[in-house]
Amino acid sequence: MEIYLSSFTSFLAEHLLGVVATLITLVLVYHYLIEKETGAKLSKRYRNSIFEAQSKIFLNATQYLISGNKDLAIKEFLSAVDINRETIETYFALGGLFRSNGEIEKAISIHRSLIARENISESHRLRALKELAVDFDKGGFVDKAIETYKDVLKINRDQYEVIQSLCRIYEDTEDWDQAYNYRIMLSKVGHQNQAETISHILVQKAKQYFEKGEFKKCEEDLEDAFRFAPSVSAKILRLKLFLVSGDMEQAKFLLLEILKEHPMYASFIFVSIDEDFKTSNAELKETYKGRLEILRKYFLEMNDKDLVNSASVVLSKVRLLKESGMTQNAFDLLKEWMDNNKHSSEVMKVEYIKLLIELQKKDEALVQTKGLLENLHQTLAKHYCRQCGYNSDSIFWRCPQCHEWETIQFRWKV
Ligand SMILES: [Zn+2]
Image (cartoon, rainbow, N blue to C red; front, side, top):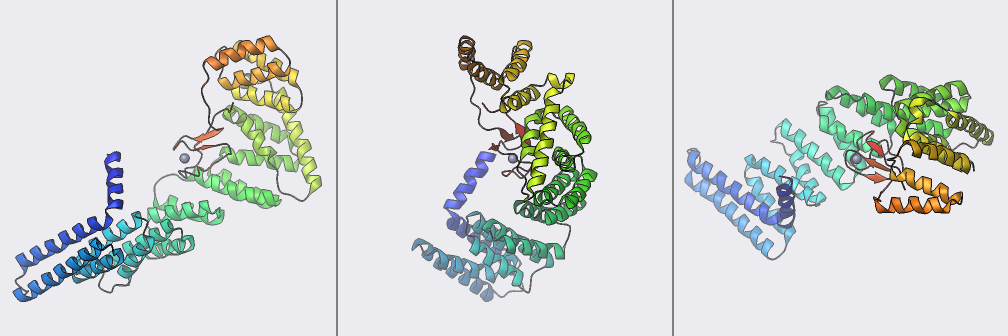
């Protein structure tokens, strides 16, 4: 089905005007026949003159098409459509075709002319307005798209797709206040629970305050985020706030909680809380670093049974130990884990080989490398989206490709 559709679409793109010509001819013929059947009210002469006019326009248009003058051909077609008031569907079809063919300006002018018509039903006008908004959106006219989507909502608020489009635009442009408002609206119109997503949006908003050093405001938005859903990103931001305020006991407790819930996120947590935050306050930066160091030590000494068995926790510890120059400790930790887990992943093996080389254990390094190379799989990037497969080394709570929230999956990079 998918294949048929896509080849149909590319067929349309290549033969757009041909298809439109056929379509309009069919519509004209249909109307001619209908009028012929039920045309008791119309005199024969009148009927014939309409048909003649239509045929003439069609012939002209075809000539323009043959001579390659697309614009004039389209103009002829449009005036043909004008003769029959009932052919509004043809207008919509034409507008849609232009848009999908990338001829946004033509689509816009068709939809605008529909909206401006006097003898059009309100539901058709609303539909034309929606189409116009999509034209602007697809054409990259963001401000006009926003304005037109909002105009649609002024007429009828119960428009799931329109609200969804506004959500996407505001999330793309990182206008989190508006993203929040429209996400709330979406949760009211649709019957899908948006709590997780709303929580993420509020965390993004809170993050902006954090980066600016406005911790009080950050705290407030974060509280709101927790009211919707205790998402991982919310917890990590709270951890950062504890480091700022110096509540080390709370920070340790929260770290343990996140790790137990999501051991996969171990290395990610430390990357996130270590991100430079843009403050001009050098003293605060120093204090923050010091407290982060305390938290790291706490993590390295953590001996919780559930966590010791997690590969990602072990790997995070190994990497933190290496960073602090404690290569031997890193090696001991990893060796113990490798001895207990015979079928470890390639990433663990690579890390192990690196440590062997660093510690000059050449023979063992050779044996391990040989084993690894024999069944090495290529790994791509650190993270990927489980919804659409998007790959990235950076962290994304909202997938830049499919716009879903929290679909990020971790893959250890070799
Ligand atoms: Zn995705």
